[in-house]
Amino acid sequence: MQVTVKAFATLRNIMDSKFTEELEEGSTISHLLTILMEKYPGLSDEIFEEGRRELKDFVNILVNGRNISFLNGFDTTLNNDDLVVLFPPAGGG
Image (cartoon, rainbow, N blue to C red; front, top):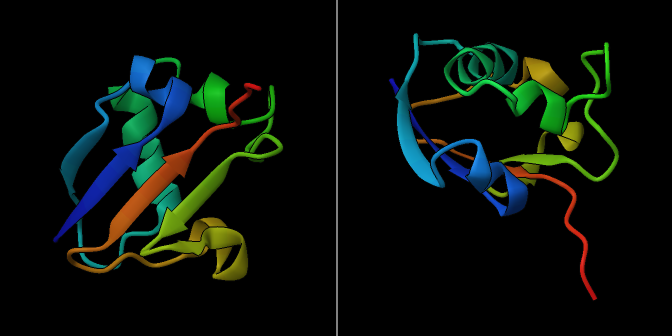
C-alpha cells in the first residue's frame, strides 16, 4: 500500500516536503516513523524528546487531518492512500 507523507517547516531541511512511501498492509505510524528515521538521518532529533520515543512539545502528526493523539497514537493503523503530515514546532512573530 502507499501513503503520502508531507513535511513542514524545519523538517523540509531534513526530508523531502512531499513523497509517497510504500508500506506493508497493516503498518502503523510507528512503523512509518522507523522507516523515515532510517531514510532521513536527523529526523529523530527533530521530532522526539532526547533519548525517548516521545514526541517533542508542539510536534504534531496528522493522518488524513486527524492528530494521532486523538487516534491510537503511534499504533494508529495506516491505510492505502492515507495522507500523513508532520508538523514540527515553528517559531516566528
